[in-house]
Image (cartoon, rainbow, N blue to C red; front, side, top):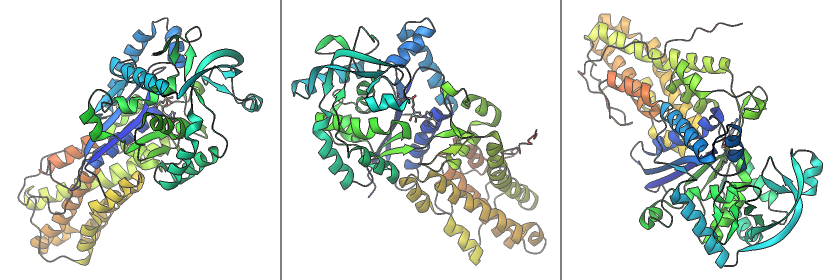
Length: 503
Ligand code: MSP
């Protein structure tokens, strides 16, 4: 059953550098899902939260490198993130920064409460610490050689009794198959939970790291960055500050994350919520990585794709379309300019854009630019096209996080309409039977309109253009929204073909 609200989140991004395609991807995905959930007869109220993770060592080091106080550094980069989201047509309900007072208040109050419940204790700890990963690691980890910047540390710290919740968490995952998706990630977490779960170190001594939220019960320490960051998901909808808002939105319907931050979200976060006495999110969905060649796109590898450059060259809609169509949610996907151009030319220039050109050209020539009216007699092919224009199917794919298949099914409708035009050749029919030619053009134009409505979440700008040309702005996804007699507006090619120079 669909509820009338939908709360979804992206990870909050470290402000250590400019955002790349990997960050843009999750945020676009959330935006596309949010817009789909607002479309159609089952439209839901949406809370879409994104933001920035501004504390911790990575950010402190990035600020130091630029010779700036961390807050100044964060403020500057926050502007860049906001600008980019705007250029990408991303419309979050709320943009949270962990340095904001509203968030610091939540973190401190949660810590205090859990501390008073006896769920946080202090202990002297001696062990290996990975500076790069900002966490304590085991002897086996050290031997694996997978960690850089490893040192032995002996210090007092505070720990959250995460181990107390291991059994409850396993039971919850087993009882709720949709809690961790896709299924292979769920199995991964269950596998991890077969080992005894340790307690979670939630403090860092200020002598080692000063940039964080001070513990309410010990001024010599700041909060471990993940304990701080995860709480953003409850700060956003108003935990402890807006009881009505919070009650309306919590629990989150979907936390979208990359596969590299699965443990923090599927183990740390639910146990924290259990200690706080709050419901667990309905779904944690881990997507794969964007790769360039065979390797993960990342700042340290220097192989990042700048989303702004792409947008400036090809337009925001094409970038959103490619990212959503090309990645099967849950698997890795490859980013190359060649794949991008091919996807653009085939789907947007040849299929979607071309359908508009054809119908508007012919309606111009044979009907004075006025949309002809439909006919009551429908051929089998016309009925098949109407059946394909089915919002319900798109909605099912979206609810199952199968975004690429949702897009494929819309593009099938576009493809059918193009094939229908070729087969029916209304430019020939018009010479002998203008009424029949009108029916053909009406059907193809209506298929174009429905596909444009269904693609609004993916391509908000170009679909608005198409609907404006058709005089159908604000129309819904049900068949029959075109108004006969409407004068089509003049237009340029929607997606001019990209001529690629192959080296
Ligand atoms: N700050 C933490 C998240 C805290 S959430 C409470 C963090 N930030 S991050 O900026 O390093 O990464 C944010 C997200 O970007 C992660 O989900 C990560 O998987 C995603 N990506 C980073 N590089 C990526 C690709 N190359 N491809 C797809 N997503 C990737 O982790």
